[in-house]
Image 1 (cartoon, rainbow, N blue to C red):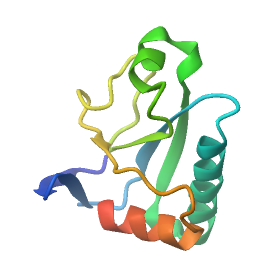
Image 2 (cartoon, helix red, strand yellow):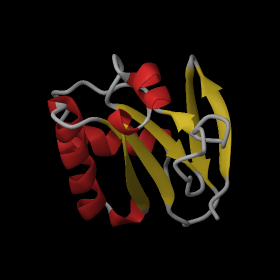
Image 3 (cartoon, rainbow, N blue to C red):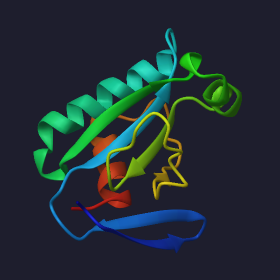
Length: 122
């Protein structure tokens, strides 16, 4: 499994891959969230065009669990990067995942790719 080296740059945690294993991007979302849908489409486009980044996307619908809804209802879309696959019962931060900073909804696919490369270069 990929091992992340974590450090802090300002207030943003960054990571560097030690292997080529896939990391998991966890996207907290809810039905009808246009910001979430836009980011999901851009992440999928990056996944297709930059295969060397080697990541999987897991969608977590905040309306399916009250604790997620209470935590993220005003924040979605929320993105975490995890060095290992998580179950629905795993809390991202407690499991070693890193919260990625919020992107502008106007970000292009290229900008999303740069954002991923900056926070988790392979």
